[in-house]
Length: 129
Image (tube, rainbow, N blue to C red; front, side, top):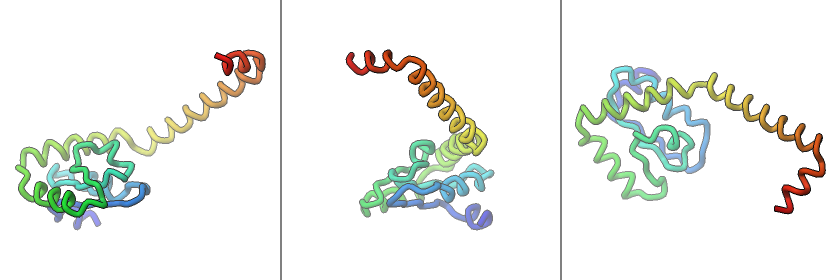
């Protein structure tokens, strides 16, 4: 797949439902030449992270076609700048950071539960506000 990602001028990930976003992130990761354009559905979770992609509504055929045209006509400097920023995002938001955030969220929930259990009357007063 690496060779295919590297050979492509652009990659379209036009998901109708959010998945694991691996194709979008694999394409960005493979582009160590910092070239290429990612066209990404706004319904994909990766669209919140990879904001430098060309974001499209997957139900809008005209918008998707326009994004392909823009990708083909985009200057090399703009392609490189966008890809550089997306590569940095993918590198920083890796599985270790994701797991760390999950563990921190669980710890916060547990702290709140422990606090609520230790002060049952406080919880009632907070709900009345």
